Image (cartoon, rainbow, N blue to C red; front, side, top):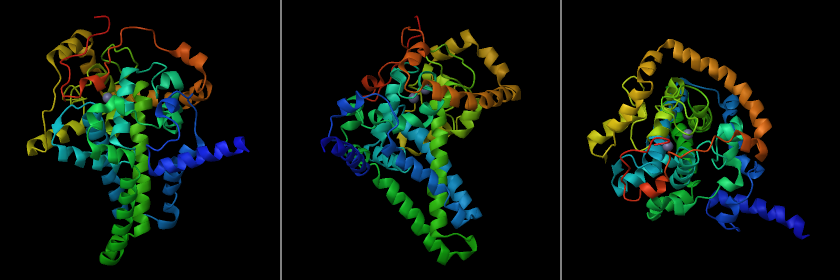
Length: 392
Ligand SMILES: [Zn+2]
Ligand SMILES: [Zn+2]
């Protein structure tokens, strides 16, 4: 009897966590100590998100719905990179407390859980990049695990508030993080009601409530999820390396296009405290351009630049090669890698996921970690002048 009740309790626990993500019968520490594995109940939101896209079979499309989906992808990709990543995870600029709340509210529409959960896992990634402890390294756990699997694992569900103390001291942020389903539900409902209104008020747009829900929420959010996940998976596999970081982060023009600038991931792993990820004018970083524009309005301020020491280091290494490499042929190289990476990655994923022996073999050579625990760096909003070079 007791053994039959245990799985039921676990399912009930998972269902309650959809409403209150901090609810748990177990301590967060004991959940985080569990082995990695795909949790089927936690897969349900992803299944719903992807199946929702199939609603297009019944709702059809319209140019209006298409542009709503594209605009919401663009705006929310900026929010993921410029807000969840460059503000909440790394504090590379400042804003007022109300501004911070607005940013967290916008972030919640991206359906990538709360700002504190996102920042905690991202800081953890920088601390343990491409080591077994890294929750989403394609080198340790395989492509599909790094792309989507890790989010379905129970041990990655709780937010470790002790690692984001600088954010956890704001109850309004903790509220949004705890009830992380609230804003997405309101957002989807708002899209549906807007479509219903436009159906009557502007019939020339040929849209409807169901159509805006499918295109604006399901299709746009699914594309946003996979675009963002490319940074966890492909940005450690595809592209060139300017800096000799202890992880395998890469700089990729294609990923920068998809993610509005996050593709300069090797730059970012070398120096995460700057608002910029494209360090040079030819490294397209749309998120940075928008943040720069926002700083002129006074809504945000204190954007952090790239220190001279990092530019010197880049010059000493392969600056001239990098300038040369930025040609159509380098993009072609990335396309060729992409062709190879995805099928190969699927095979690696099957072979390596849940295999600690292989994980240990694939672990990068031990060396001085260049990534500091950013949770220790950001409480007062200040960042270090420079991270030490490996071996320095
Ligand atoms: Zn990374
Ligand atoms: Zn980062």
